[in-house]
Image 1 (cartoon, rainbow, N blue to C red):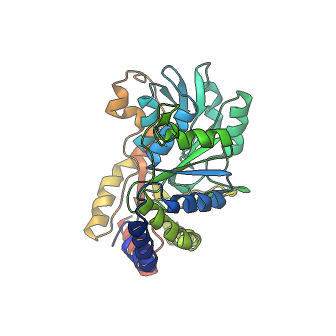
Image 2 (image 1 turned 90 degrees about the vertical axis):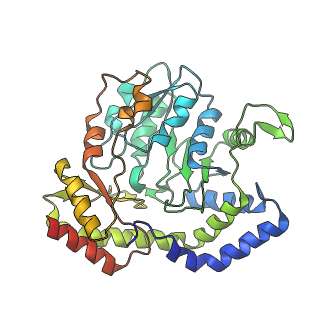
Image 3 (image 1 turned 90 degrees about the horizontal axis):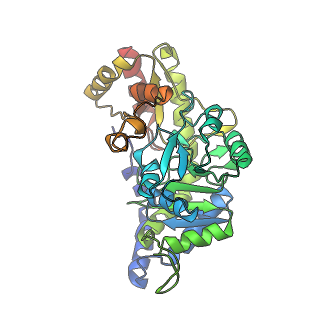
Length: 369
């Protein structure tokens, strides 16, 4: 059994991928070829944003968004401590200070009720994470951001394809960034990502920044980076987009089957909570165990039955050595993030997970408890 099955998906798109890769080999534009333009157009249409900029990775997308907003040393960027480390890396690399706002334990997303008191005169942006595939409460966060005239950057590395009320992830904020790492709901066959915005000036700035700050060849008006997507990744993503709506529906069906099958174990763990106004991509199907001590034993019992599991994420960011060494957070506690890190456990989730496999997983869990 696989935690994520990319091989089955590849069999469905193999012919299209091979045809597209052959076209790239023939025209020779391996970086920023015509496939990039086609992909950016389709990505923008998916989320209802005016501009999509294909970039080299999800981490680069966050870095480029911060660069476009002129984040500098001494600035503060508000984010969450329960996420992948890549959320914070670009902030620190630019010399800015990440200011953490704790999560809501039901959704694992930023708690808007805790946001306003984190804002200071040094705050230059708010960067919530739409974790596990569910959008943050953006009406609440955008309202606070507007009050203080602050831009909002959605870290949508796991939520591309999700819906929030009448909008879509990546089309709800000043800027949004996603990842197309292979394990994501929409993933390439290597690192890649994208930035989204409705602001034409920001879009143009990101396009320049991702290409060494050029406004034309060998004329550099900004200090940028090499953040370009290669044409091969665009080929793969264009093919995968043809299946994406179907695969999102399958993820929701698989999540519903888990929910139903695991209902008898609710005293031992909770299944993912999705707000009534949201639809999730279920980038992860994550249980929250009522007892943190049981996680290691449960993982071992499932592994003995060849059922893979993952912990996303075992340490909150403010506990990571690289962040502790900054000596900014020695006395800070974010109890919900710290508790989540001890109690979360993700089960296999991908569009090609068979019902028989799910039944084995469900039976193993119910038997254990």
